[in-house]
Length: 122
Image 1 (cartoon, rainbow, N blue to C red):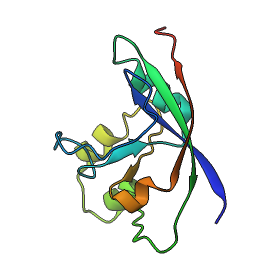
Image 2: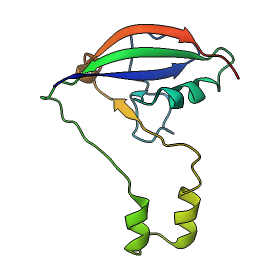
Image 3: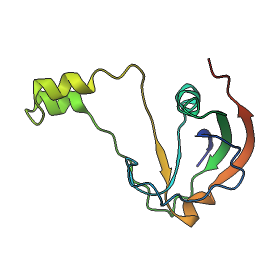
Image 4: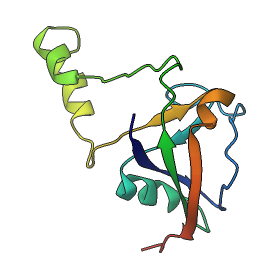
């Protein structure tokens, strides 16, 4: 499997990623969250006083249990699973979003730290 580049938002460089267990508000539970969308990571980093973007190369280990979750709210609306109001609430996203959750020690070994940089606040 080839390599891909992912980004992590924080208030400091993260050279050695760890699984964060303290916040239960994350979409996919405890883990180390990244995205392939650089602009998204930069927006998320700007929430901090010192916005920092860390970059990694990933070579996925195919022996891992990898789950892919894609929520298609359009088909859910067409199938009557969600209401019209729910559909339009979800359609208000200004930007596409993407998340990868590395949620085990074995998954973290797939990450190779490349660099960190401070993101301009504006």
